[in-house]
Length: 185
Image (cartoon, rainbow, N blue to C red; front, side, top):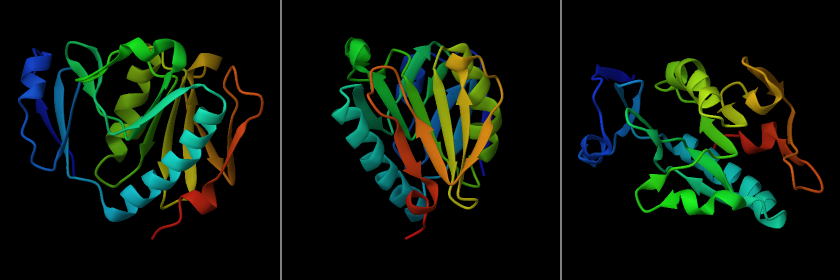
């Protein structure tokens, strides 16, 4: 279960001092969000998704895929998605401390402790920050929730079966078989 701790004056030095204790820390709208470390099923699914997305992004020279990294938009907004894609044109925004540019894609894998954060709190912020697409995969339901902010959507579309992504610069779409990629260990 996520434990929110309210504080409105977070800066990066405060965030960087959080303990390395296995918990997952994020700051959203000045609120500290703490969730337990991910389960083995979560990590297994993330590994499979990473391979599929990274192979596609590399093949089409779209950028770089990074897992579990700090996304540092502005003071008071320090997020840590499961995975993201930094466009090739924005590589300069990859810093030692985290990502300081808007990714072209942000990916989360749903867990019981993160559902309220990933499906309710984060989508609006990611839309405000100019992220073109935000995906939340639900391994229990074998589906994905897709926000296509670049197309003007402010609500999610639930996708079952196959998820397609055709970003600019790619000659063919990425097709993800949700049943296969979301299967447990």
